[in-house]
Image (cartoon, rainbow, N blue to C red; front, top):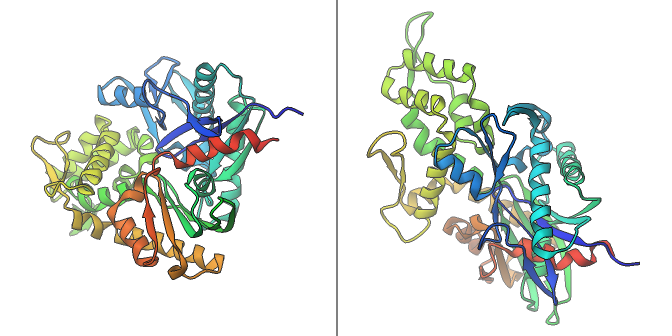
Amino acid sequence: MTAPNTLGIDFGTSNSAAGIAVAGRPWLVEMEPGETTLPTAVFFEEDARRMRIGRSATRALISGEEGRFIRALKSLLGTPLLHEERRLGGERISFATIISRFLAEMKTRAETATHMQFTHALSGRPVRFHSKDADRNIQAEKDLRACYLEAGFQDVLFMYEPEAALRAAAPAQGLGLIVDIGGGTSDFTAFEQQQDGSTRILASNGVRLGGTDFDRQLSIQHVMPLLGRGSQIRNTFGGGTLPAPNRLFNDLATWQMIPFLYTPESRRAAQDLAANAAEPAKLARLVSVLEDELGHELAFAVERGKIRANGPDRSAAIDLKLLERGLSVPLAADVLNETLAGQTAAIGNCAAETLTQAGISPGQVDRIVLVGGSSLLAAVQTQMQALCPNARTETANAMTAVADGLALAAAGAFA
């Protein structure tokens, strides 16, 4: 029986990719001109039933086109929000359908590029969509399966993302640990490998914590105070003041929650806070962000600042000129590392748990294979090196390892 044409798909929180194996090597589809990775972002034009995806969606946001931008859709899998409908682009649509349309567009682009029809998919998935809720974790895979079927695939199989990345890693004898830090989750696979490449997976583990959580922490701690977080608000029903409620600020710092803030209720709440604020100029910025729908631009500014602070630029900062001319927040590397210390420690703890489940000690690990853009943060690398002091660190294939591994495994997935 001939195996069906199967497309390997890495549907990520921040970026996605797809590919197949050609002559035993991974070949990733050019999803956009000159690009094999596709930002997992969509833009609905105002009153037009058209959904733009990837860099086209981001350009529409940055250029100020009328419409709604959404990112980090993967984080909604397994939650009630996934099936809630919103009026977008002139129609009422659920976020599950948005994901389905995104996957369908990836399928179409892959078929155009390869002149093949893909009836099946091998999809990556985090070890845990949700860290502490087993039922929600199960529901997330069911939701993603339903999205693939709605996108036009007849069937889909799932592979843990760090195990997919292991397929793409160069073989080397010894004990290793895949450290896959994505946009929304961190995943780990401990393995034993022989010189000929034969591999035994010892344990896989994960935690719902990733690059978008780093962005959120940086925004809450360094940007939201400039919009009034922590400011005192006069009590209109008595004397004294109270700190501004955190909900608006926390949601504004969270990629997947930003679209839900552009409502009359949220705008009125911000205006009421500004009217009674001890620091009205700060709360006026919050009002402007909600009224002008600048939440995603603000989140992108934080992300860019994080990337700069992780590099050699010792004068790195979060540029907030979109709020006010000349406004910025200094973000030196040591400040970045200190801000993210709690989260990187949690990642280190999960990695240590993986090794315990595998029955090996950290000192036995020969190699650490870093996967995902956020794995390249110096704070993450320091944490991993401290955990496994005898291991060498590999970063060569960090950005495409999961997609490459899925591409390699796709042909045999339904054999």
